[in-house]
Image 1 (spheres, helix red, strand yellow):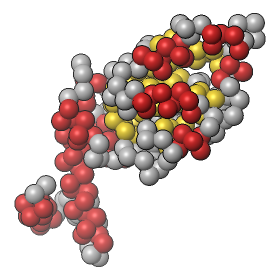
Image 2 (cartoon, rainbow, N blue to C red; image 1 turned 135 degrees about the vertical axis):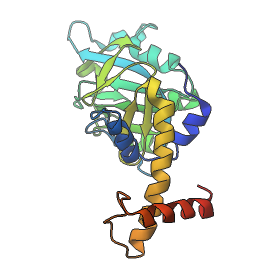
Image 3 (cartoon, rainbow, N blue to C red; image 1 turned 90 degrees about the horizontal axis):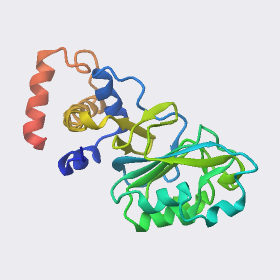
Length: 238
């Protein structure tokens, strides 16, 4: 199931906070990736289907610098095969002692049209990555090469990233706060719900800024506020 273009547009306009609430209404409580932050909080929002890379702990006799000469090395393949419009999601076992990737690899993803990159480990060259026109999320900066701690093993398999299960094709949405994972089969429904929620939250914010109490407004248990919201929507064409 590919991501609908209209759903992509909707998801680009809503916050991860709103998406988490929409997912909670569906019984999904654990979809926000933990301890992962944007390198550039002012970067445009990120939306794309998950394409995954899994690391296991490195072993000294197998993880020498020579492995990068192998054209089939899983990390290199992931960089070259992650589809345009997708998000590369890396399972680094929440271990940021060595880099999941660096600026050259992330630049290659950017040039190939990939929508973003997420790791629960760290990036090296993070100041350079922060300046690239591609959303990037990690735990913290990390200078050592990935080979010192990580062994790239599998591509496009189910992984864990920041305590969240990520399946290939899941929808990754990132903003200035972090990254949320939407199961692919729920993407259209969650996108629609989040747009509706965002309209109401914008209405509520205006009212609260104007001095109104949240009682009866948020949630809208007062019929007068429900009618006011309907009028607001008509006026603002929301």
